[in-house]
Amino acid sequence: MECKDRNCPVHGGLKTRGMKITGTVVSDKVKKTAIVKVDYTRYIYKYERYLRKRSRIPAHNPECINATLGDAVNIQGTRRLSKTKSFVITGLANKKQ
Image (cartoon, rainbow, N blue to C red; front, side, top):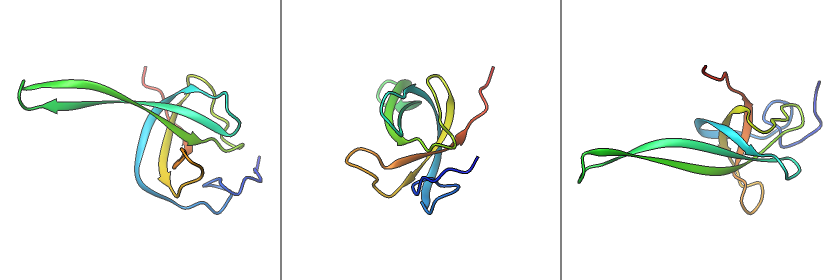
């Protein structure tokens, strides 16, 4: 199925840049947008321990991918698409079981 979305990285003309991030979709209520939760760790030198952190990144959700709640997805940076969106979902990731 080919989508007609011009902001699709596969079928449209949207260029991606930066590193590829894997996360989980926690909200897909907004049209063509998904909120992706990314978990990561940060080392704290003072305490010599790791701190678990998370980010919630709004990403463009093209029609051909159509990620839903709970899907593991790959996102990549792109030009600013709206006030908050500067990432796009490039595909579904394989969930580790």
